[in-house]
Structures are given as C-alpha cells and as structure tokens.
Amino acid sequence: MADTSPPDALSRFERTIAAEEKIEPRDWMPDKYRLNLVRQISQHAHSEVVGQLPEGNWIARAPSLRRKAILLAKVQDEAGHGLYLYSAAETLGVSREEMLDDLLSGKAKYASIFNYPTLSWADVGAIGWLVDGAAIVNQISLCRTSYGPYARAMVRICKEESFHQRQGFEIMQTLAAGSAEQKAMAQDALNRWWWPSLMMFGPHDAESAHTQQSMQWKIKRQSNDELRQKFVDQTAVQAAHIGLVIPDPLLKWNESRGHYDFGPIDWDEFNRVLAGHGPCNRARLAARRKAHEDGEWVRDAMLAHADKQRARATGAAA
Amino acid sequence: MNVAHFEYVQRLGDNALILGQRLSEWCGHSPFLEEDIAMANTALDLIGRARMLYAHAAALEGQGRDEDALAYGRDERQFGNFLICELPNGDYACTLIRQYLVDVYHHALYSTLCGSSDAGLAAIAGKAVKECAYHLRRSGDWVVRLGDGTAESHARCQAALDEVWAYTAEMFNGDAIDDAMAAAGIGVAPGSLAAAWRDEVEAQLALATLSVPRDDWSASGGRQGLHTEHMGRLLAELQFVQRAYPGQKW
Image (tube, rainbow over all chains, first blue to last red; front, top):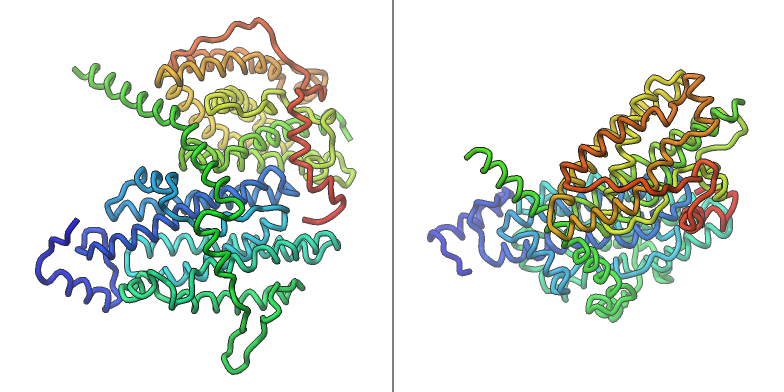
C-alpha cells in the first residue's frame, strides 16, 4: 500500500514524535512505521502465546499446591498479554487470523528463548527470574514507545511481569537455600538459561537490522546493548545475593564504566536457534499447529451456532 | 477427631484437585487463546478450592499435616474423588461435557453447603458457589454451542456424553460417611441432589439437541479409593517432585 497522504502529513507525524506525543490508530503514519510496529507487536504477542508451553510443561508437576496455583495464574497472565498485544496490533489494520497464520507457517518469529526445554522445576524459577526479568527491562523501556496502544498495553503488562519476575526469583531463592540437590538444580537451570536470556535483547546495536529506524521513530527507546547491560547489572547482584554463580568467568564489576563487564555471546547459537534449529523449535510450532488444527471444529461449531441463533432471531422477528 | 468429618472434607478437596489437574493440561493447547485463559482460570479456581478444603481437613484432623501432605503424600487408594474427575480430557467436547455435568452437581452441592453447621466449610462453600455459578454458565453455554453447532460438533458431543454418562451416577450414591455428615448438618446427602440435577441437565441437553443416554451401566468406586487405571498416572505426574525429593521446601 502506497502512502497517500496530505502534503504536510509526514512533517506532522515527525513533529508528534519529536514532541514525545503518541501516535494513535487514526493518525497518518508512514507505511514503514506501521509495518515495523506490526512486526514487533505481533512478534511480542506470539512470544506470550508460545511462552505458555515451556512453563505449562510444569503445571501438572508443580511441587506444591501454592506453586501450582501461582504458575497457573502466571501462564494465564501470559495468554492475556498475548490478547492485549494482538488487539494493539489489530489497531494497525492487521487481523488476528493473519498474524496467527504467519506464526503457524513459521513466517513470523517469537522469542527464541522459548525454544529451549524446561528440564526441571528450577527452570520455572529461572524463566520467571531471567526471562521475565529480561522482558521487563525491555518492556519498561517500551512503556514510552511512540505508538499509543502499544505503550498503554506495555504499562499493564509490566505490572504483571514484575509479579512474574518476583515469583521466579523466589523459587530460585528457595531452591538455593534448600538441600544440596535443590541448590544444584537451581544452579543447573541458571547455567542453561543465562546466555539465552542475554540473547533475548537481540544482536549488538551495530548488527541489528531494525534498531536505527526504530530508535528514530521512538518505537524503541533504548538500544539492545544498553538494555542488555542494564539486565546484566541487576541480575549479577541478585545472583550473588542468593548464592548462585552466573556461568561467565569474565563477569566482573568495572569501576570505571560503572557496569559489569561480561563475556562474549555465542552468536552462532543465537542464529541457529533463530533459524529454527534450537532444541524445541519444531516441538513448539507443532504444539501450536496441533492446538489450532484440533480446535478447528470447535471454532466452526461456534460460528455455526451463532449463525443459527441469528437466523432464528430474524425468523422470529419476521 | 471425627474421622467421617475429616474424610468428607478431604474428598471434596480430592474432587477439586483432580478435576483441576486435568483441566490444567489444556493450558496452551486449547482451540483458541480466549479458551486457554478460561481453562487456566477454571483450573485455578479448582486448585484454590482444593487448597482451602485440604487446609480445613488437615485442621480438623489435627495431626500436623498440611494441604500438601494431603495432595502429595497419599496414594491412589487413599483418594476419594469421583472417577469422572480423573478421566482423561479426551477432545474439547469430552472435557466440556464432563465439566458441565460436574458443574451442575457442584453448584447444587456448594449452594447447600453454604448452610453447613461447620462454619469453616460453609465459608469455603460461600466462595466456591460463586465460582461454580460462573463455571456452570460457561460450560452450559458451550454444551449448547457445540451440541447445536455443526454435524461434527454434535456427533462429538453426543459421543462424549454417551461415554461420560455412566460416571455421573456415582456422584449421587453416598456412603456411610455422607449419611453421617448429612445427619449432623455438616454435609449433604448426595441422593437428595439427584432429581434436580437430572431435570436441569435434561433441559440443557434438549437445548443442545443432544439425547440423554440410557442408564444401562454405571461406574463407581471413587469414594472407596477404587479408581480407574488413569488415576495412578495422574498422581505419578502430580506428585513426582515431592516423591523424588521428599521432605523439602519448594
């Protein structure tokens, strides 16, 4: 679709962004801005939806009824976040069906971290602490994003994510203070989830395909590397507090930078998982496809019933 | 301690826990996103109810056990839930038909238990009955939508109903514990709920264009801990972590 716009539309759009005001659904916006947002918001929504699977893997095995209730509530929140985000994306003229088709065909991405398996109860703690922790760092920044519906969805999501992060940290804290086996379980989970969590912030700024334009339009407010550093700084302190060791021999406080230094990220692994070759990519997509295909008759029945009801109402009125 | 009183409350907890455990299996796998949320939400209500009932039962027992000791520390033969709760989910029709049949029962049961002479149980029932009303509205709507939807959804619902129906009689066949609790004004005589349940279910099935199955056989044994072969596997999964690492805090 070409930009058909009044002559001063672009400058008005740019002035709005410069003034830190929000772009709203009915405002004129460049096609690229719209497409960039659709990509980012739908990817975010898909991540929430696929993200139900690794944690859902432990609902049936949660080690206490309290933990089971918390985990159910959390996974339910994630699905709710998926709903707000699909709705935010729909304000940009794309339908949920189109977005879902793109997810199921493999065209759309979702957070690569969910392509790793949850192997022990401690993984549920690690996901809350690290994955939701990384997500919050990113999402707090997105509360100031220039597109109004996205910014407002983020404010609400951040509140719930902060509860998720705390419950994950509390699981890890409990395990770290528990038996030797429990502590080993927590350390093993940290070892496996640490580097994928750092990868959640995306490539280095210099290599990021979308960063520059997104920053200019204030879709993104801080760069991948800035956000990653913030996450490392806060998490290093938390790990030390509960007596777990971050699996990075180069992690060290740098007085002159006022930040933690950390070791190089394995971008080959990042690219491999992104390309569909992580341990669970196939299983995650297969699970989503199966749910969608198995549910087709249910969705058809709902529509058929609604049609019958309408026809009956019309018949009765006639 | 009144053993019958403890057992009665514990069994109510068992029904909530085992059905909640089954529903939670849908999380992330249901037909669309709104249903993922609704299923998790219903499962959460049931797990929350199980926690309150177990905590109350453990307090009645007074042996220092807690909700988790009852949920994680007992074997199959010691669980007193109805068999209908432990049946595998099957397809969405099967899950929702089962849910509807149990929701009608639970709604009537907890409405009556609001007047229990056990104030703790009455308070739990007061919360449960609100959830039951909502669960029933939802599952009742689904039964009509799917029963009176497409030819396929109708056939699936009828097959599910025919399969599950035999497990409903058990809900109304009380034993000595139920009788004692009803006599004491603590519990409800399950048989007293049967006629109204049947009327309500038949009316809804008629709206859903579904036929009431024949009462040619019925399954029972849950109250006595005589379960289906599905129960052991359900518990193996539910209890795995506590069994593998006994005596830890989580």
